[in-house]
Each structure stands twice: as C-alpha cells, then as structure tokens.
Image 1 (cartoon, rainbow, N blue to C red):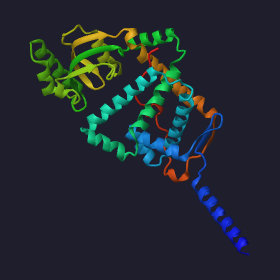
Image 2: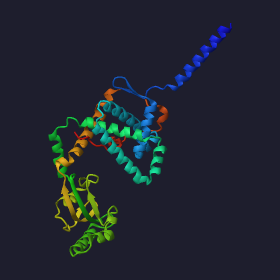
Image 3: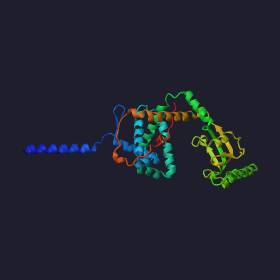
Image 4: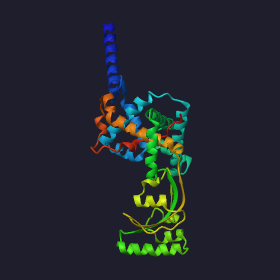
Length: 333
C-alpha cells in the first residue's frame, strides 16, 4: 500500500508540473516561411525596441492600437525573413555601426549626458546590443533589396531628382511677408519696399530678423542651408526654382507662393554628381522595393498570426509604412 501511495503521489506531482509548464508555454504570435515562428516574448521585445527607437510609433503601440501592433508584427516577420537570407559581411557590419552611431548621437544631443542616455535605455527596457542588432537587420534588408537595381534606373532617378532640386546644395537667405494676416496688396508693397532697401545696401540678415514672418529662419537672419538632410526639392515650386536659377548674391524680385511673398538671395550653390549620390539613390529605390514586398508579397509567406487580445485596446488606421523604417545606409559594393 505504501508503494501505491508513493506512486500516486509521484503521478500527482508529475501532472502538476505538466500543468505549470503548459501554463507557461504560449502559442506563437506568428508563423511564416518554412515553419519559422515568432513567440509572444520575442514580439514584445521587438515592440520595446520600436518604442525606444521611434517614440512616436511607440505611443500608438503603448495605446494598444491594433493596426500599429499588426504592422509591427509584419515588419518583424519581414525583418527576419529577409535578414536571414543576407550574409553578414564586414561592410554590412560597418554600415550598421554607422546607423547605431547616428542614433546614439541623436540621443546624446537630446538628453545631454551619457548618464541620461543610459537611463533612456533602462527606462525603455532595451540594451545597446539589441538596438545594434535591430539596425543590423535594417542594413541587411536594404542590402537585399538593393540587389539587381539596373544602372539606367538609378541614372533616370538621378536626372529626375536633379530637375526637382534634390541634389542641389544651396545657402539661401529669404524674407517672407505672409498674406495670412494682411492683404496680398499690402504684402506686395511691403516686400517691394524691402527689396529697394536691400538693393541699396541694407543688411539682409538684420532686415530678415526684423521683418520676416518665417519663424523657422528669423533667428538665422533668414538663412536656410539646403542639403541631403534638408532637401531643396521639398520646398514649394516657385521658391525652389528661384533658388536653383537666381545669380549668386543677387536680390530677387518678390516671389509669390502660397505662403505670401519672398525676397531671396542665393549665397552659395552647387550640384551633387551622380557618383556622389548613387548610394542615396540606391537606398531610395531599395525602400520602394521593400515597401512593395511588404504590401504585396509578405502576406503570402505568413501562415499564422495571432496578436494576444490583452495587447489590443483600440482600433485605428494603419500607420504609414515608412514611419517605422529608421535611417538606413547601403553598403558599398
């Protein structure tokens, strides 16, 4: 009888252990490809990474936005599926380190001290190694989608971008007289008066600080420096065309845009060559291919997805796909 009692006790303990283990094992959040899985734990860690790297997106995830949660899951699947097909070369590692370094620099500029930066990682429950791995996967994806882009397509993209000012680097001073709170006639007269003063030798920076309605450039004396980070091609057409064609250091006639009237002076201007921006163009075209894969092909490799109901708190619109793609670079060939 003692043996039977001991045996029964062992069976009971074994059953209890199985129940505990079963309670701890959770089904995969997603399955894709040839049986690959993303566990709930891996998914939640990835969400923490996105929150740390992109706080704006993180806010939607924190709010339990279903579309944002689904989008991030799909992005994680694409990350893994593509990155696992790319060999980790020294050049890819170098570019990933570069992206991470840019991220670190931005954090230090925002938080001021190394201690505050370290606290940011702690507060977001992520490590530097995890963030580095994230950027490594992004570079791998860009490397993957950069393959087989024809040279003629890159050159065509360059010519189109050049016409639109995306490869023009320029230092431009301007004064904006807005038509938001004054009539067009009044704004025009004010602008013409300022043009006369400038052509008579008045200091442009001083007049800009005193008169411009453009708060973004008032403190710099009306100066904008257009480059890859702040492309001239993203400005309104009339302004852009003037910046690309005005003779250097000449005071423009009043230039009308949707914002009002501008007075412009181009102080420096140059145009980047194809070779100088080739990698930038490759990255842009690679991102187009990446977005196409995400929107039209990814769903075909996903065999299961099941975001835990406890994480979903509200429905919303799907976020912009480019919103979740951090700064990425294309490895040199």
